[in-house]
Amino acid sequence: MNTVLELLFWLSIALIVWTQLGYALALAALAALLGARKSSPADTGERPSVSLIVAAHDEQEVIAAKLRNALALDYPRQLLEVIVACDGCTDATVQRAREAGADAVLELPRGGKIRAQDAAVRAGRGEIVAFSDANALWEPDALRSLVQAFSDPTVGYACGQVGFVQAARGEGATNQEGLYWRYEMSVRSYESRLRSITAGNGAIYATRREAYIEVDPVMGHDLSFPFNMVKRGWRAVYVPSARAKEKMVPSIEGEFARKRRMMSHTWPIVLRGGMLSPRGYGLGYGLMILSHRILRYATPALHAVALVANLLLVLDGAGTLYTVTLTLQWALLVAAGVGGVVRTRPLLLARYYVLTTASPALGLWDWLRHGTSASWEAAEGTR
Image (cartoon, rainbow, N blue to C red; front, side):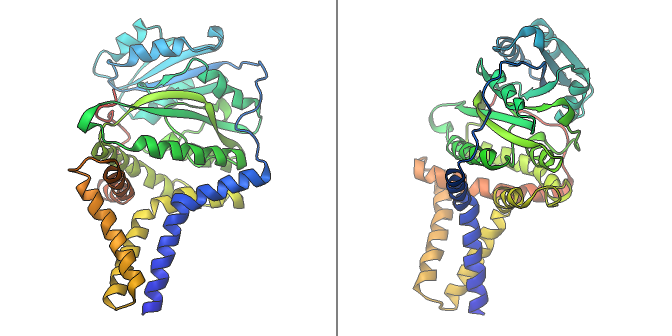
């Protein structure tokens, strides 16, 4: 019995360490060894036409600033059309978008972000279709950098770098997402150089018009586009020089709620959206999906197995080593709990890790219990 428990414990720990740290180190080593390509090709000076699409639901507070930002981008105005797709807006978003100079404002019934984006793509004329959140502000050269990736004919999807700005100060500003996101962006940089990224982000990304895919409305583009592009013969790349900023949720608890909601959209993609099918991946990209996506989403289960196996080993008198590992696991959980009261950086990091690691399990529970709505609301504190 001890042998089985030990195997379960060490296998779970090894998989957690691999998906959280080992995978990134392996990518970095491979990129250095193989001399992997740069993230984007040199600027050729060619400029395709672009439809920049902003899906919006009740964004009256930020839509004018977003449009001023979009119209100030360093991109030939005659090649850029800005489309606001209003998803069942009940406030002044439509009026303010028109007043701010949008080239087209679509008034759509509430169908969710994905269906609003689909409608805007059909209405647009650009060779490249780019997408942004209503609260994301792009740097002046961001669109030019993003579009430059498509000078490589193998690229079907490109996403930029989003930097998170703390939306609050003082005790309410506890979210540690910025630290995690910097790590995540470095991993995506290596994925992009070696093959293709395994996920994007909604603040700044683009596709070729012919590569655009209409997916199930509960399946967001961030996760469903990159692997589907690969299955269709395209590359999905990360362009760190294409930069945007947006406010992040102020608190760890708010970030947990946001990730839990996101995971209720993620599980349909994983379980019935084609991610688990290796067809079209190739060995290298298949290992990337396994390491960075599937194992990451399985981490709550891996932690649970490690904890239960460790506890049983200690109760069975397996030795001092297992007492130490059990103590460390409980210390992490206790630190996360205390971090809800004592707001010091180590305790906040422990709390962030535990809550965000739990979010895939709770997102799965939410999806299985009552499904996932295609509509969305802005996360608190991000506007």
